[in-house]
Amino acid sequence: MQGAFLAHALATVEALTFRQAVWLFCPAFMLHVIEEWPRLTGWAKRHASNQFTQRDYNSIHVAGIIGSILAALIVFWFPNRTVSFLFFAFVFTPSVFFNTLFHVGASILTRTYCPGVITAVTIYLPLFALVSELAYKEGLLSVGSVIATLLVGGVFHTWEVGHNVFKAW
Image: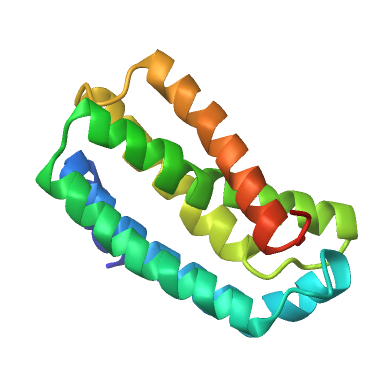
């Protein structure tokens, strides 16, 4: 029975289009927030900045949930190269790919569990691979635009975490 369920689940995922797959970002983001919410503020106060508050966390992540829904709507309605590039560069790549690197790196550097690392590795990385592959297959991202979204997304995520979590600027 499990084998049949897994085969059906895999077939369902393989049948997704890019426009459909972007909707997985919203529940993935919410699951990540559920993992982070009760503990990330305390972790950040110990390892990043004692100025980071639960209010900061709540504001950032409520905006993120709303943003994930709006981004999915825009990409769904306007699935073209420009919209896809902007989605990957400023929303998806920073939120999913670089957030995973942040959580894994933070866990390694502090030798502690950084809340969010489990969903980042088990949900975000496969989701990033799936959505990126579909965008590439459907001609919405080229190799050059993938490289550009990684560069822009990395800079954007670094700025965002530096400002919001580390309170560096």
